[in-house]
Image 1 (cartoon, rainbow, N blue to C red):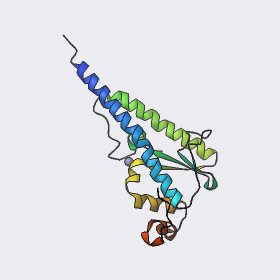
Image 2: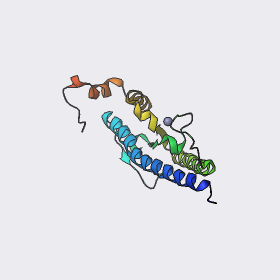
Image 3: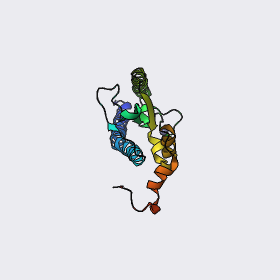
Image 4: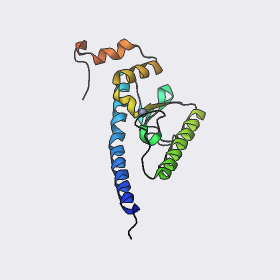
Amino acid sequence: MPSPDSNNEKSAEETRSRIMRAVRRANTRPEIVVRRLLHRMGLRFRLHRRGLPGTPDIVLPGRHTAIFVHGCFWHRHSGCRMASMPKTRIDFWQQKFDRNVERDRDNERALVDQGWRVLTVWECETRDLEALAERLRHLFHIERSKSADADSASSGGRCCET
Ligand SMILES: [Zn+2]
């Protein structure tokens, strides 16, 4: 008698690789969104600085700030709809998630110990550009008018959006 589980196993495997593909694809878009906003605000940054704990996605050396752009699913954005729990192989996922969250916490602590300010931008935040821009302006003490100019069409085409 064939194991009744073998089909489930297989489809769980397919679901998992589908999710992983989606994650890899999504991984760059939120980062690009954040970079673009920072750029518009006139902030200077570097990308994926190795040698820093956790290789932060974006580093602003002048502001002593390291930014992680985290996928809500993998990094367990607390209370977020995108951080749902898969229906199968819950133990497998839970362990994986726990490790990710623990690693994030360790990296953040190590960076703070080295004198960095650490920001986390969640993937879901990059879907509301206005709110995210507002948060970044606040964090970097940037006046609204400065970046609003770059956003508005009446600024005389100064913008360098590609
Ligand atoms: Zn989220």
